[in-house]
Image (cartoon, rainbow, N blue to C red; front, side, top):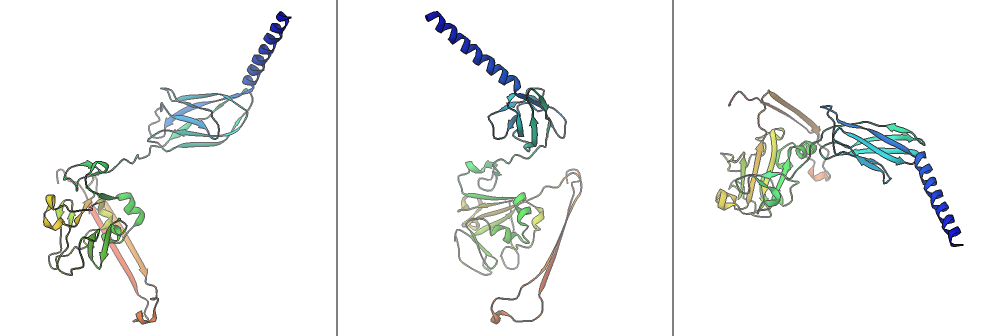
Length: 286
């Protein structure tokens, strides 16, 4: 009786193994190669996944991946790697026992790292290691917001406020027309103030020539003197390239009617227009 039970158990196990092997043979395989779209070189270490399933694989040194045991169905494949835009292929039909070839060509993308600031310590320091609160507006954010003047770009920085053309950081000073400000304004590390009024000329530098803006929120008198009692705004301009570069921007528009009738001093349609042209080129060391 005992031997009969053992034979029955062995028969069941063999049946289960055979059923599993048969089911596995009915599954499909998804394979292919992942390359760099620009250099056409194979990319090792790319994760290729079947979206919504636990199936996936990584590419080898030759950029080849192979996903085995994929049940029949329609899938979406994604290829992921740091430094590249994710690849995606939809409506991949996997039939029983078939081997499907799906190749990817990934486009390189910019990996944004923490910015390195120079204003807070007068040397290159990662922003997370700076001992002073610093905000940075990069060139990409300036392009997205497209401000007409520099002060309009600074209005989005937390803690920066304007009263007329007068700027203060974290309410460091009040409004003092013609008497300067306790916020030091720098262009590439050089103090810049209007000679006639002692105030900052926000219209002197085209926004499209700015690489980034660093705002130090706090007293920086130890590094920059008493003019930096309320903080520092350092505008860092774009470095000239080897080839010539010409930038052109034209803006125009009309003003809406004031909300209150008391503010309407004319019936004419008021308008504005502005043209910014910039040219730069590196000539040897100049």
